[in-house]
Amino acid sequence: MKKSGVSQATVAKHAGVSSMTVSRVLSTPEIVDADTRERVLASIVETGYVANKRTRTICVLISSIANNTFTETVSGVSEAASSAGYDIILGDIGYSKDQEVQVVSTMLSRRPDGIVISSTDHTRKTKTLLKNAGIPIVEIWDYPQRPVDMVAGYSNIEAGELAADYFYAKGYRRFAYFGNEFQRDRSRWEGFCERAKDLTGNSPQFIHALSSKNGTHSFKAGDEFFRHFKTMKKKPDAVFCSSDVLGAGIIFSAARQGIPMPDTVAVCGFGDSAFAEAIFPALTTIRVPAYDMGVQAGSMIIAENSGQRVIDKKVKLSLEIAERQST
Image (cartoon, rainbow, N blue to C red; front, side, top):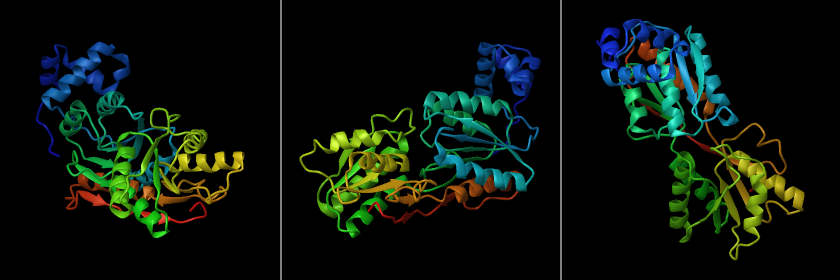
């Protein structure tokens, strides 16, 4: 990404404020009136201004701090950053496109040397902010065909295909999907659904995890799954869950109700969380190279800032099945 030649004075004139106000928004945004701050940030986007001062910081923006799925990725970025003398700043975009705009704007006012972001489904304003930032941007936890700048991720569509292939190879034929319709969940569903139809001739049933809130799943969703399961005329023999929390929730609920697993229904989660192997029956899941993803993303930003040319700006990591007792 190229640096801009626009000055703070240009931004100030565009926003109708003084250059000192622009400087304060960039250095200490919390002391500037909210309306003025937003006007200056908007002008920064529209003029394409980029601060030249290096801060040796990398912003890591994740979908939810409450979701431990991202912990290893943050650790990976931190490892790459610290080894090169960088610090990281953590931001929570809350599975919300509107919140993402605000967080990206605020983080850019801190003048980071790069951004790692776990979302790839952005509003036009967020894309403009990122493209005009003039710093390396790495999108993670998915594999967009047209990234804003760079990507170090995996295909959620292929994750769904992998789950369907695995179930079919194990002899299961009646599939279901348990999740919601957030971006990555939807992609996993699409891959799972299409591959299941190709393999079995039937579309899998979509069971909504209604207790999921703002993208963060709950173990309690397992009770909802069985309430729905018991009413189904054609009960699935295998269910792919969009997260390990949902998969574990089904297992916990089955234990409370005395439902034999996996005899009643086989369960595959997603993410290979730390608890997946510890529960009983241990949860079969799709293992994501979360730590390696973070290291790769951090290294790409550091390489770009050190003057090295990152030849491969689209790095695709592999997924694998961690087979355990739940299937």
